[in-house]
Image 1: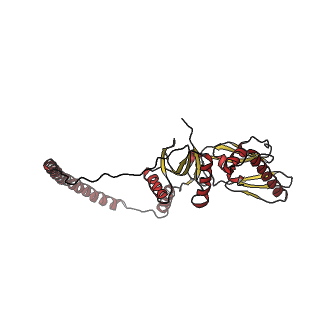
Image 2: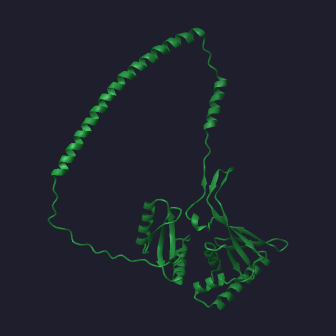
Length: 309
């Protein structure tokens, strides 16, 4: 049985997933933060940890496995206990246990279990689709310092006589620029007035043409019948969430061409447009379909369960 996959599925919705007789995986919410050393911005996420003291069976993982594998609760619990035993034996042999999308388990010299989470998976569904961002440093101040250094190294000396001559030339130049600016203003004003008058003429001609035009349809087009499916169900297999609506529609079209009954289920509270492979009324069917999609198309697909209103 794929217990590591089941644990990963449950961590999206629950804060604690217990493996009876072995320990519990805990999900702690962490706010978005900025690393000043690497200039990296990290989105909010769930940080996964492990507690070997929580071993009592709460039924969550066993019930989920029973539903996914279509087994009785007793059979699923027995398989879960065998899974916990296998983990303990590997750790006793100083082997490193790799739980896909969750983390690594190992045992130190004193027999304590060490857990190292995999940071690539964000179990906070509210931040789905968000990734870290590295901000490039601004070099404006550095360039200014370089210019000041060059000026200090190569100062320009101007004598008093040459400075007076340059002041005369500068005064004449400023007067010439002022006159040319005034003449230029009137010149461009005439051009702007001319363009505005021509624009009005063009708009009046277009309005007259539209008013005189008549439209006739001799052969009306035949009616078109669309065969559209009506998706329903509270179990959605999510393919992605997009900030731009056009990107969401493009993804829907791609999935439909691949044979899925994809659609957009609207925006979440963060303004992201969610696209799903399909919607299901039966949870077991949805779990099997999600596993098939993860194996063949998208390993990051996940299940969204909407409450019945």
